[in-house]
Length: 210
Ligand code: TMP
Image (tube, rainbow, N blue to C red; front, side):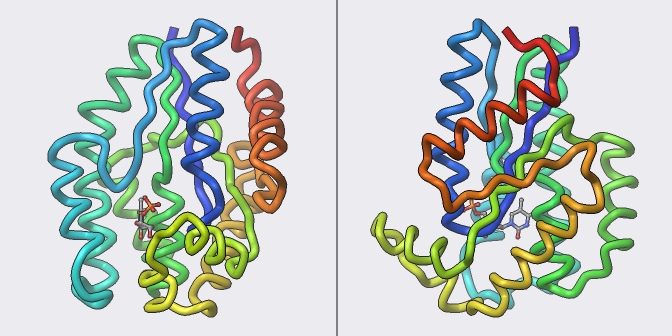
């Protein structure tokens, strides 16, 4: 039996990491083989690309180059980790995937969505998640959360509230355009309620899990 590919998307400080852990425990308690991973990254080569993508000046790469590097990392990740896990029947939970390229490099960075879809089709064909959970949060609350946990607000400060509001809109538009695959979750709720909403979505969308 082929496994299931679940992606988590949304702005910064939306609580993706906390939700990944909650879903991992919930699935493991039901006896499922669970693989948790993230993008950019997830394999040694893709983690190397993550380093060069997330460090340095914000304008280190042109938006198109950044999209291509994201896809270079993504192809390695899909071919070497995600696909083999799905083939052995695992549930793969991935913190960010292709929708982040559409939102960050596309809507926020100015690369036309059609160009990103062409890159996707050329490198991964019709490979898409079975379910995408979009964690939606007011960027001001997201920023406060990252400050509260002692993380530097550098990325937020560099990119600005306007950028984060555009990102939020981009993720909501992606979800609205693909309601079969995407579920929007109010990430302003308590972590317990966010996990509860995500589990309900898994049960409703992925059928029998236990
Ligand atoms: P995160 O691990 O904190 O979510 O950081 C990953 C960063 O990389 C985040 O700022 C979003 C960004 N990103 C893109 O710009 N495009 C992509 O395709 C992906 C996967 C992430």
